[in-house]
Structure formats: C-alpha cells, structure tokens
Length: 106
Image 1 (cartoon, helix red, strand yellow):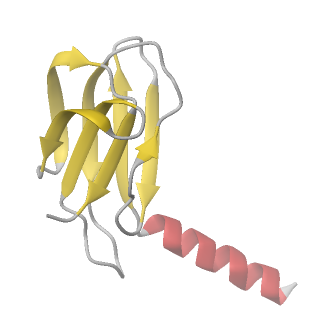
Image 2 (cartoon, one colour; image 1 turned 90 degrees about the horizontal axis):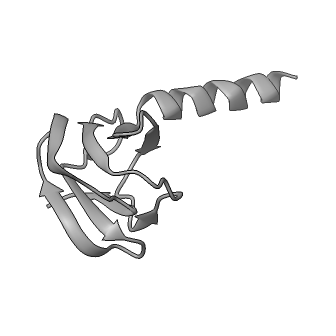
Image 3 (cartoon, helix red, strand yellow; image 1 turned 180 degrees about the vertical axis):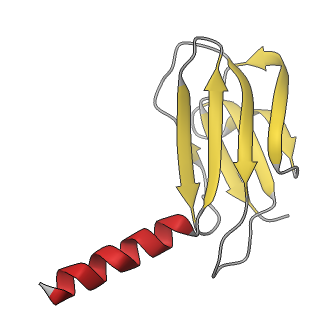
C-alpha cells in the first residue's frame, strides 16, 4: 500500500511540473498536451475544425524549459503553419488547420 502511495505522489509531482500546450478550435473544442522535455513530432487526433489560438506554458521544475512551438497543417510534422518562441496566448490569424506539433528548444 505504501508503494502505491509513493507512485501516485511521484506521478502527480511529475505532471504538475510539465510544460503545457492547449490549442483552441473555432468549433469550441480544445486539445491539452503536456510533457517534460522536447516532444518530438506528435500527431493530433483529428478535429475537423480550424485552430484559432493556443496557450503555451513552458515551465518545468526539473528539466530545461522548452522555448519553441511549431505547428503543422499535416500529420507527420509536414507543412509548417506556425513557429514561435513566445509563451502565453497566441492568436493564429488567420485560423488554420493544425494536425501535428513539436515543442522543443531553439
């Protein structure tokens, strides 16, 4: 029982110290992603709607903070549609399809 409690505490601690990326879509849906290091290329589940903005919090407690978000119009990180080193909220003007992303360091 004690081992399960330790595992749960470690899991919660690692999730609390992760970078977060939230993409908001024009149809009201959103996707939340998180990690502790560079993400590599990540394909998103298909949402048949354009993205209008995103929020990026790069802060991690025990790892180097990522400082770059790249969004792609196709899966496999093909057709880059956005590249930013800005944290916080960013408007995607004009709205665009986002089907994959990379969070990493310059």
